[in-house]
Amino acid sequence: MGELLLIVLAAALVNNFVLVQFLGVCPALGASRRLEGAIGMALSTALVLTTASGLSFLVERFLLQRFELQYLKLLAFVVVIGLSLQLWELLIRRFSPLLSRLLGLYLPLIASNCALLGVALLNSAASRSFVAALFYAAGAALGFGLALALLAGLRDRMRHSDVPLPFRGAAIVFVTAGILSLAFVGFAGFARL
Amino acid sequence: MTTRFDVAPAPHAPALVGVPLVMRRVLYALAPAAITYTWFFGWGLLINFAIAAVCALLAEGGVLRLRGRRTRVALNDGSALVTAALLSFALPPLVPAWIPALGSVVAIVVAKQLFGGLGKNLFNPAMVGYVFLLVSFPVEMTQWIPPRMGDIDYMHLTFLGQLEYSFLGRLPNAIDIDTLTRATPLDIVKEGLRTAHSFAQLRGGSLFGDFGGRGWEWVANVIAVGGLYLLFTGTIRWQIPVALLVGLLVPATAFYVLDSDHYAAPGFHLFSGASMLGAFFIATDPVSAAASDRGRLIYGACIGLLTYAIRTWGGYPDGLAFAVLLMNAAVPLIDRYTRPRIYGQR
Image 1: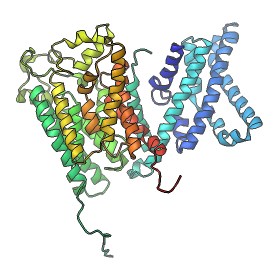
Image 2 (image 1 turned 60 degrees about the horizontal axis):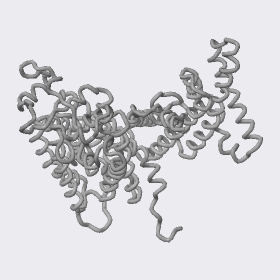
Image 3 (image 1 turned 90 degrees about the vertical axis):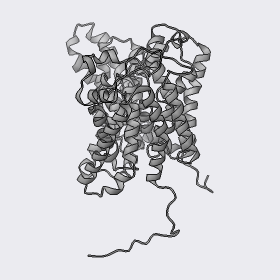
């Protein structure tokens, strides 16, 4: 149990996907314009990410390894992620109009989140067990949500800043995200992880 | 061409407090600490401050010129000097000249001017400069020296020797820089606890005094006195310093009481590293801190907790700079959820 908790903390803070590993930066910067949007994106990503990692593990163990098709890993994972995405989109649209309205915009956007593929590949590289892989995905989603929330808050505050003309828009957001990355370096080396 | 009479609303009395006065008070509060620091650790601090101050003022003036703004007010308000002062307290005394120069330029240009100047920065500029340097130049940023105490066998550089090293990179008698640097008390404790020494054992070392490291605890005490001066003149409010120190002391005491061999004493944490400097000078930067009183308590407490966590379990010996930056990022969220209630509304 303790080790699983550490996996979650490592994925969320020490190796935060957006700020430390620089995966999934595009949706992070895209969805952090407002805090509500950030929360929506974080929730949808969490759902798809956990399912996708679980399914990727199963596909790798019971399909690729069984038939010695490991060279198809990348392809298989991409397909699995696409499938999970479609699955959740269908489920949400069918069973919860409320959720569909809240999260509906973000689900298709998650397709461009390379953190999904990153989590699946990293789980495979580290040969994690099924449960550990799920917890890693949960941690990654948590970290993604944290980065989104922090960025959304900062961008909200920046509306009152007096940014020089050349830096307005994307540039200053990248600078801010960069400073945030610097701050997250402080989590490096948490020895127990 | 139109003329416009700017008529200010009543009361037509000069403001009692303004930015220049606040900045001057902060510099006065830091002055005794600077003298103590120089007494124990040599001229490095003052040289670094001089370099950092000049570069900060030039950088600020430069950016304002590029933006077509007037520089006189901004350069005279002393905020660049305060940033330079805090940065030079954070740096090791024995660093090449380009370190404080680069650090203060990054602090002023990236962390302050890029967001719009004084009052608009999201992150504490001095801490951004320091963390940038620490992450990019880990070797130079860990060149610490021991204090000047009778029983410590160490040859301090003269003023000219420091200048020579700082600007030309030359050391007297061609000594290597490695022979001049020593670990700080925080370094020793961190490494020692990691290699299964007990804290009591480490505390008996020659670099340790009553609470923290020798020399360092004196500096921390004088900084605390300066901080109290700021409190009593109303320049800073009590919420952040008290919350930060409580946030640091509570886990420190708890873990120390549970296992006094493997965790550092609370007193050690209080008087080592940047705890006092952070509590009274760094975290209290009003622009990057939380806005409401309740928010300030949460902000300060979390910085204290994060600092303790990074010091005890993280990879860096002193986590205050990272803790401050992380909490600066969380301030908009803190402010959102600790909005003061408007009188009459539920």
